[in-house]
Amino acid sequence: MAIELQTIIDLIRYGASRFNASGLTYGHSYDNALDEATQLTLHALHMPHDLSPVYGQARVTEAEKEEVLALFLRRIEERIPAAYLTGEAWFAGLSFKSDPRALVPRSPIAELIEAGFEPWLGGREVRRALDLCTGSGCIAIAMAHYNPDWHVDGIDLSDEALSLARENEKRLLVENLRLLKSDLFSGLQGEHYDLIVTNPPYVTNDETDALPKEYSHEPDMGLRAGDDGLDLALKILRDAPLHLTDEGLLICEVGEAERALTKLLPELPLAWVEFKVGQMGVFVAERHDLVTHNARIRELADAREAASAPSSLF
Image 1 (spheres, rainbow, N blue to C red):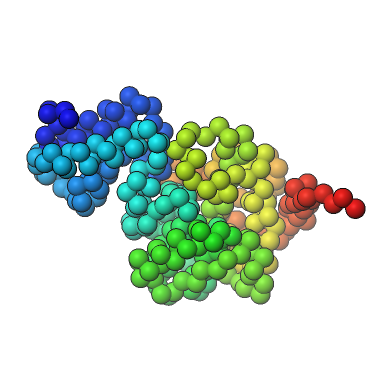
Image 2 (spheres, rainbow, N blue to C red):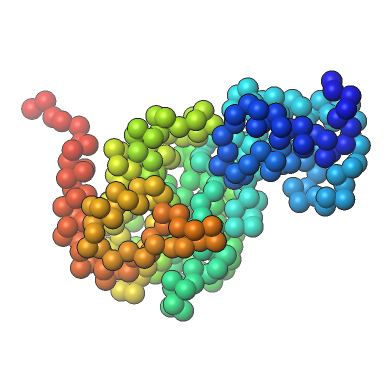
């Protein structure tokens, strides 16, 4: 064991150096080696994630050092995202349990939640909100947490994801949330919402196949969305008007599939959100615009569904 590693800051610096030398891929809650090394070190030492830097010079015991280095080794050799190693991911200022039952929480929609979805809501009242493809429950739970007067539904097709979301619901003590199993809107007949928020799968088949090993620990169904990444987004655009109130708003993340979407539907008025770090493939759509252009959206979505449907032998 390297005798030179004596303090917390020694371990963090060493971990970051080893991660960079090993060519790790970041993007699961943390976007750089130093932040990941910090969180893994503090987790192994059973210290809070926001420990004051004044403790950086605190010396560690030999047993503690072994715990930290063992975690570093797993991150390097197994390419497991740091959030899965610690079992925790932070989203919209809240701590969520994170494990391979669902994607690691990391959507830029967190920034919108903390801003109360303004200026996009324009002050309009929200009584009911929906999170489609809720996964770990991070978007639905954060909406419910920050807006206790809203009634929030979180929907997912995966039983495993929903079980994790329910654990996070209890973890964060939200009481204005309902979690349901549904294939997009199929189980929501007669339900209407003032706000629908969704971060559906939007990675193309080719991109999913080429993703670094870190992503192989996440459920494939949370990433893969066809040849252009729009298989689910088109269905959502088609069916959302049936579940939005007259002045309802749809907010949807499509990431890199933004270019494909604007090419397919250049006539559809979509407002692309500018975040603190720039544009990140999240659009805002008004119900009345989705209704106006529903015929074209339906044509595209229906053709996509027909092409992916299993063929009959008879």
